[in-house]
Image (cartoon, rainbow over all chains, first blue to last red; front, side, top):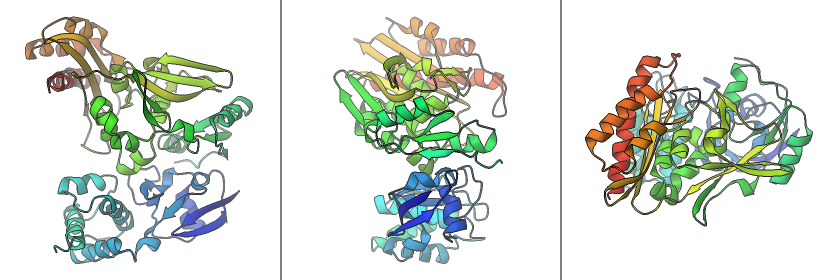
Length: 156
Length: 289
């Protein structure tokens, strides 16, 4: 089937299978490699993307269901002020080890800070509760998100 | 993990169109958020040829007051429930249940209709909707009926709907001023967790006397259960911590739990008592604020 949706701000048309997930479409057909395949059943969050601005697991979304909708990944968000600050803070705070969870983690953090510029530590932890990291133990990830939010408010 | 079956996706824009597709296509199933259905299809063989996407049907997505009722459309997401002032203020039991479910990613896709129709015995929206005495609106091309929410559940992961039917909305009487309700849950961790046991309570007081008491538990039988015996013993009584303790102990005998991968029946009985007490106490306190 022909599928039409907005990918990182640009309308695209592509061929998609009925039983293909958004994750497969993005990675395998459209070459969007920041979106990672982890568990494939909606538990690890490595495949998190924004659909109409909200974070979702792309492994649980059938590609045909995003017709007419907006899909955003790290490739399209990396130059946005909030994301630039998050990426910098992740690097500075050592919030990355193997890096596999990082894109999904950044998307969840981006969605949080877009809605809530001054989150508490608890709110940060809840926002990334659907993103598993097996390396860093979350301490530095939480710190990086809080640091980024401070700097965005001009307090850092 | 198996590949997804070879189905076709249909994307109706109206309920009428969706019902027609369900009535005419063979082996057709509705899909809303897909957060239960997609993992299920990866785990076991699901015999499906057509998926009918309900997420584009505007008339199924709403939360509104309608006469004496609060009515919620089937494709309302868990995030929509959590963001609703009306649900937070009038039905905190439902709000707490929705907020406890999955991750932000799951709550953004998962729907109230999907949680009910998936019919998991541990469905977190089961107990609060039972405690609110909610009804489900079931539609097919030529029929529209309201059934008590408990009747949606026919057994573990089996709903009672016919193949051409869709659960289109849920409604419950708007709780009056002074009513209190609460939800409690035990899982392996605080977020992104399936309930080992969940519980919901709803209480109405009149001059300190309990005039309405409803208590429901989940993951303790093949479907969410009302604790009718316990409710009877709270009726027309002056509530106290002692009475609630006594009633909660009774609940561990009213449930019919099984051993499974997540918890033993023994543990679930114990936790039925603990969660009944917590939910009743919290609902009672909320009557008084």
